[in-house]
Length: 485
Image 1 (tube, rainbow, N blue to C red):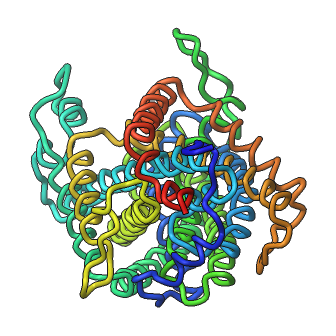
Image 2: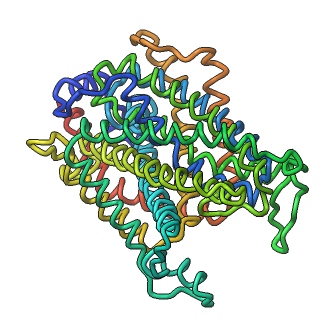
Image 3: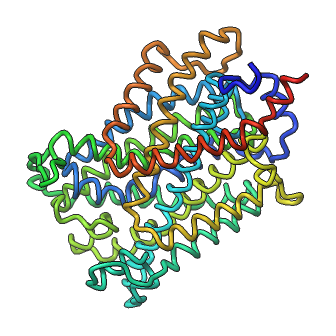
């Protein structure tokens, strides 16, 4: 049926896209793994650990990381199989276009936009918080209205509501990262590799040194008793542990970012699956160990929400360690933002190549070979949103879009096994009849645990995407021309 919302992009069209790609193929498997680690290690360890442990899970935060990792493991194996079949930019959007159909691909792509944009925004705000703490070590105190959004500045100044403020640090770091991305993937990758070495060293330092300051009594009770608020919502207990898992899920989306770089990988069919699985395993182990050390050093209900790791070492009487950790957090969060913005522009690029977004988003710079116009646009949006929005309002929005994409891809890879058993699969997900259904169920379950405010925002964003699809994208799709031929 003409313009059917279930029409699929044929495999030969993907092959044509790969042949005429203008992007530079410069990333090795370890370069891709480094990008994954660069995205995963950052906000999850340096910021979200404090929020999730203090408000929801207590010492059982380690269990929350395990739960989130299980959902990610199922999805990562499915992503890896797709990446070996379709090594193109676009990630889950591109994979679902060839299997489930255009409409679902659009919904996933639209929500990936939300994932990466809110992810980059969250990290920019967290970066500002750590920069403020770093400057404080040298006795430099900047006004609250220059380092916070209007709502947070109002709270810090003891006001009942928002006050005129603009987080200038979050604004400028976004533009610094954007300028690096415009110059090219090779330069971006080298910058990321340096930062990854620094922050991995510091994370291992936190685990080894912090272990000597762990007080076992801080882990008791390991799962705090359930607390029911006046409005009926609950925190702590097993409900709190699962809610915390949906919050720290944000920390794992780096492996998804790896798949957006397939267009710039030297050997994408083998290297992308390797990098996806390797980055997830490495970071899961580090997350569990850091969360145990952190909640062992400091009682969960006294953890600092903005800079929990640095504050824990400060409370332990290790000011020199605070300097190292804070500096690493500033550098580490920079690399997370770099990968988030990088992934965002590649999603735009894939959708624009298919005609679902204007050609503006696929224009490649003649010298740098990057989608420079969309990079500048994303930088503009993220910098403004980060300057005026509280961190807790944007971090959960990121998880909603990610969970949906993970569930859809888990189902789509099983569907493709039925539809196209003849396709070459350099990597095949093991036990697909178990892994794929569990990926769908696990991620949809975590979605059901999102807070109601997050659901409202997610549904509004998705509704806006549906309107855009039927008014613009459906009519501009490249498949319209293919159906005429």
